[in-house]
Amino acid sequence: MNNSTSLVSDVAIIGGGPSGLMLAIELGCRGVPCVLIETQRLAPSVPKANATSARTMEHYRRRGFADRVRNAGLAADHPQDVMYCTRLAGYEIARFRIPSRAQVTQRSDFGDYGEAAWPTPELPHRAQQMYIERILRDELSRYPSVVTRFGWEVTSVADTADGTIVMAREVAGAGSLTVNAQYAVGCDGPRSIVREAMGCGYQGASQAQREFFGGQMMTLHFRSADLYQCLAQGPLQRPAWQSWIVNSEMRGILIAINGVDEFAIGIQLKPGQVAENIDPDEVFRALTGGPVFHYEILNSGTWTAGYMLVAEAFRHDRLFIAGDAAHLFTPTGGMGYNTSVDDAVNLGWKLSAVTQGWAPDTLLNSYHTERHPMAERNTRFAHSMADSIGKLPMPPDLEADTLNGESGRKALGQRLLKHVADEFNIPGLQLGVRYSSAIVAHEASEPPVDSPNIYIPSGYPGARCPHVADPQIDKSQGTSLLDRFGAGFTLLSTVDLAPATQAEWSDAAVSLGIPLVQLTRTSAAVSDIYGAELVLIRPDHHIAWRGPANSKALPQLRRATGHIL
Image (tube, rainbow, N blue to C red; front, side):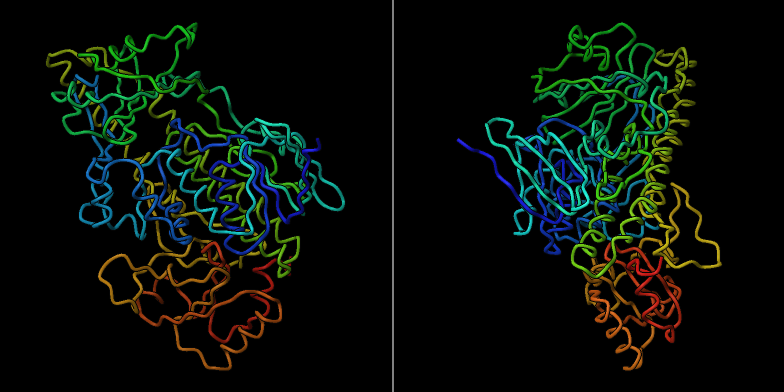
């Protein structure tokens, strides 16, 4: 019996994690035919990434499902704090307050973030990747141009003069699949078959040595109905999203998954330790310093921390890589998954433009030019934060009930408060992404400083479009000018344009086949922050160009779509 199937599509996506799923959504919402192939039939049920950045939430907002993501994870009133303690039944050393889901929704309390530091309609959110992937998979069903093959393994990828050929087999069956696509994108993780086909390796550091986040790590995913009750007299009398345990015996991190009875604990294995010989009772006893709660182990696994790796190239001919296939992080700062989503959004509109015929293939070169520096930037940040916490020395009397112990805890607490603010209060890292490439206009003036902890809203070309409350929407909360931008390009004018000028831009867009909407907002709030009479906004809500109202339309549109390179 012949169980072989052939499909023809514009784009083949290998891997259905966050980058692959988001890329399929970006293509699907524009009607681009694509095939997504993922080895796992079901969405994951084990903890992975657990922090969704403000920028990623903005991407989800553009696609209409940010509220679904916001409702996933911890209960609405569960604190999303980051807390440090000697043990879970010991001394609390430091705490960084992060607003709960309810506080974010009501915008009633910004915790230690500070409202002014995060000018965005979507603050960061804390929810496990396994919840996010279920939502992303479900969202794919909205788009008829997306074909999914969950439970299939890609066995080979070939780049030919006529396109790409992707071969796959059914994991739990006898089926085989051949996909002929114009382009193939590897979102298939660190052992990427697509990156191998590109002949491309990682560059960077992979052997960082630290007391924590510098070697073989172990995660215990467990259920406990009485953890909070058993530890209610210690630091967890006010629960936290992340509870870091630091002492001379063992370091670890407790992560609240649903805020009720599901948790994960991460530890670093010591030299010579084998995961199979780890006794969870001993781990929990060392980290709590008190009673061992009742628990049920759901999953356990090992992984390696200490990576700061970025692939040499993100494109080779018709092959691309994104997500972990393109960059590998240590999870401090939570930027691995979020960088992956940013990859997908950047590549998605460009593949759409090329396959739909309104941009040349050379536009796709800007994917590497724009995203590779961001991957290097973000992996450097994660590496520095891993050094900051992983190499932190412990005072000798940290747990002693003495004046020396109290003094040591106070001094360590001050260092940890600085560290946690550096790691988690990062509006600049999340919102300050600015691209520099041939499809972005050059300005002689200096761009805003790129600092992880400070975000300076700006209309500088290449920058993310700054959020401004939309002055023409009569709502007190939750409105954003970002919501008014189109799925294609948007021409934002901060002055009233003459009909002839509007017609020039419309005609130029039509002549190139570029989807363009025009939007006028003349309030000072908009003109001051965007800094020009005209602003050309890309489909990914980055600024392609800005200038005076008498600027010629055609050159700006041609540059932004790769016609002038």
